[in-house]
Length: 414
Image (cartoon, rainbow, N blue to C red; front, side):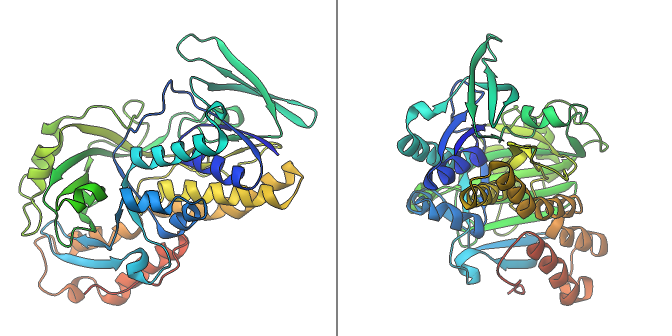
């Protein structure tokens, strides 16, 4: 089939590679003038890495990213609550990777250019509209800088992978309004520092509204005995509702905003204020999502990634679920010559699962264990079992991992 993808982010490029591997004719149209390695760190869970491995990208990922050993939940006093092995350390066939978002996008872009051809990746083409012409969909793109029409092209299928502010989604939901903000502002940065713990651990410390997340993202630094640490500060700064202004992964943030609430978070194994102060740049981003949709596909048009299911960045599911969408889309379009039926099958395979994740992330996902410990033992604990019994803890972890499609059963802290 002939497929147009609106959006050249992680989901859109993965879909392009997966569809091309299935023999489809794919074109990607991206709104920005140049696709550059922007953003900070992200995690890609093992089941999504498995899909990237099928596309031949495992060597590039392994050479760039950190293979995550464990996800460790700790209190704001630095006490371990839960240690969850990840990827191959949990007995899975594939690793979990911590990587700079820009590095992942460049790996995908380089592969797409090499396999599809540079002429199949068009920048400065923002989705404007579409219309049905018989059994084809005609898609019009504009150049945002000039406001002029850049192209009108036809295909069998249009996939909107154009992010949380998706113009494709807006066609079907014109009155949806801005994303939903939960009142938490995230400060994000990357700092060169010494490795902490075993050098391949991701930590979540604190509780909702005052949380610190940190993990290494660079194989090059690790090979030199150093660490490039991605960190996130979550701060509750407002009431849930519309975000204070349109979010951007690259909006400058203030050191003063994020340093003071974590000024005394100096653990034996990690100096949180030093990391915050050591970042070359700090970005801020309101934690937002949208209500899940019951329907993604409309005839020959469907949605993918954040355009379909933007979710709070909890549980490493943002990029992961976009990659899984791409794999499911390629499978559905490869199973039939009926494009409309294929898009319905793709939606059926994905829509309920990601809706559950969106709702569970609104309840903090696994991070709820941090809130429970903070509420029950705000000054720290001597006996975790007396604060959060193991059975209760394992039930929370297991429920979320099953909903998110994890293959391995939870293991107790050690």
